[in-house]
Length: 272
Image: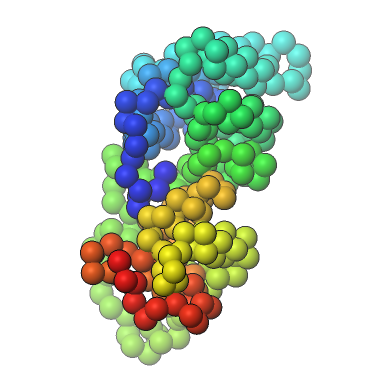
């Protein structure tokens, strides 16, 4: 789910399976919009005990977005039968409907084995969930997006898009560190992220030490389910730039290139 890459196979069929107990109904529109970059979610199912008051908000959303509700009663106290129903349906769909890809919307790490099995069968698995989602589930997905990273176009503009407030006095402005510097420091201190980004550049770099940004982004996503929006930026160009550890330039062909600043043998400029 990366903005630097062109979507591929928009006619692909995606099975969207939602754990309604662990996903807010308010995010359905943005999830479907995100999935539309990769294909059509022509199988849409949401699982839960619809008699529960907590799922009342889902009623209108199910009709609005043509999502099929799958009723699952809680047969035992403390046991989540919804998870089992979703897993059974996913495996049935794998061999009957045979969708091109799956999307599991949940913050429950118990779905990790399911994701791994679907991927082992050659299917991409997209994930949506909250920040509390366990790391094994996040890492198992082909791509995982935190729901708070998705902007709803139907909502009012965010504070960053609102008209600028009058400038503060210079004396006060100097006393505050810039947001850009704070972000750069935070990203640079994320050892796992930096290791993945450096590995991506190394894997896709040409002899002159420069890598196409699109190729580096793809290489990063092959290592882990990285989406720049989870780090507060819009695309891989901004993510590489935000760490302060890479040099980004545009080549003569107008395409963006990235190089590791540690590579002292790199050419002054990308040659392609």
